[in-house]
Image (cartoon, rainbow over the protein chains, first blue to last red):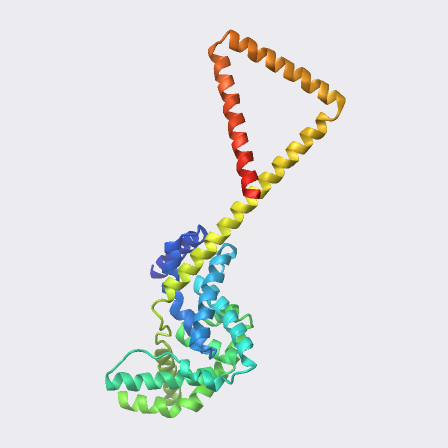
Amino acid sequence: MGKQLENDKHSICIASLKAGDSRMFTRFVREFQDMVFACCRMMGLSELDTEDAASETFLAAWQSIGKFNEKSKLSSWLWSIAYHKAVDYRRKKSSGKALDETIDTIPTPQTTSPEGLENMEQQQRLWAAVQQLPIPQAAAIVLYYRESKSIDEIAHILEMPENTVKTHLHRGRKELYNQLHTVWENDYVKKY
Amino acid sequence: MSKNIDNEEQFDLWLSTNLKISAHSNPAFTRKVVQEMERLKAEKMLRQVILQERLMGGLLVLALLTAIGLLCCPPVLRGFYTLLEIVIISAIHGLLNPSPPIVVLTALVLLFTVSAMKSLWNTVIAES
């Protein structure tokens, strides 16, 4: 029922976007901006480049919405555009900038409580570790764990076979575990 | 073995939770993107209008050139003068003996001529 409702909502959204409805475009940007920013930041783009790439992603989506055939989900289609934009930006910048320099762009949620600060530190360490992964591994990890996409959806977005996605997920997860198991264990022990 | 699986599940859960933080920071982002979209939309519309006007202008010029070209052929010119003669005589006759259909027809011809002249004038202004 909920899924059907969501599908209907997205169908209406797509139809309105195809008709050039500006208000729907505003809602579309609001709904998906977090996902697009996460995709760009996962690639280790600077704050400025993230915003530019995200902005270009939405404008490209608006310009090519007529070609969207609704075989895939709207979010998957948008993710795919954002991913390619971010790869382009990363490629442009990679000539003169090391990835380590961009780690200060990891999302920083606003919080002041000690527990919140501790969580924030954990999240920043996790995002820093994700940014250090090779792009396909980082993309698979973010899509699977953050966006809750299925393996076949990830395969479709990243244009690779499902088995390759599974391999990237396995390797990425293993690498994250090796880097972060102490952080995770401390958190786990504290909670249970 | 089961402890390992449990650990893996817990780690997966931890990954999901901690990756799901808000990645967006600039509240003015939506406004900026929408403004940019409106600008692109306006540019697209302007391009379409310019293209339409150019097309109309081109077609008008082509029609005029074809008409002038055809008038250069004696048989067409003769036919044109004969037609003109019939039209003028009919118009004079109509004006001397006005009846509702003739008045309506004259008004329609006048309206059409004025709007065609106006469209031609606008195209000339736009082109210049």
